[in-house]
Length: 187
Image (cartoon, rainbow, N blue to C red):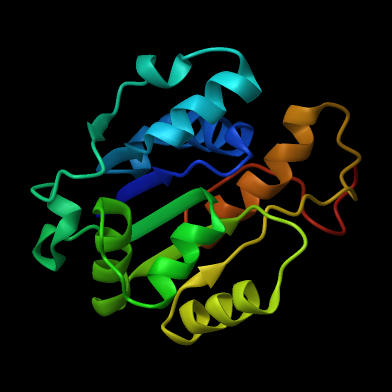
């Protein structure tokens, strides 16, 4: 059973979240439940970067930052994967230090304590030492830091194809099937 929650923070990189959600929705038969948690800042960044409010039209279960009745706020909810995309450094820092002051940080804490899969798509540059130590703390706790660093060996032609190189990696990390370029394949 795959129960996934996707959280979108206010970091730049809404295109990553949009492409991920599109691809996850296409994998409907592989996912039993897909939920979405989006901060108010994330909505504003989405509008600014993508010029639309298409996040309102996704056929997903939505939760607010303060909805602690969400099933993934407890280990008994049996969500096995959480993807934070993009993951702001503020959110990363709160997770790394165990501060559960909203549903994103509470859900991440639950995923880590239950030894399930937390994937944080960090979207900032450059990193300072505090960021790096927070990434280390999450990694040591069992989380995966996947920087939003695209690859280019597949020769992407559009910004969507560039962003998809990161998203496909995230889908791989979540243990889901994805048709993507693999190193060593013919282009």
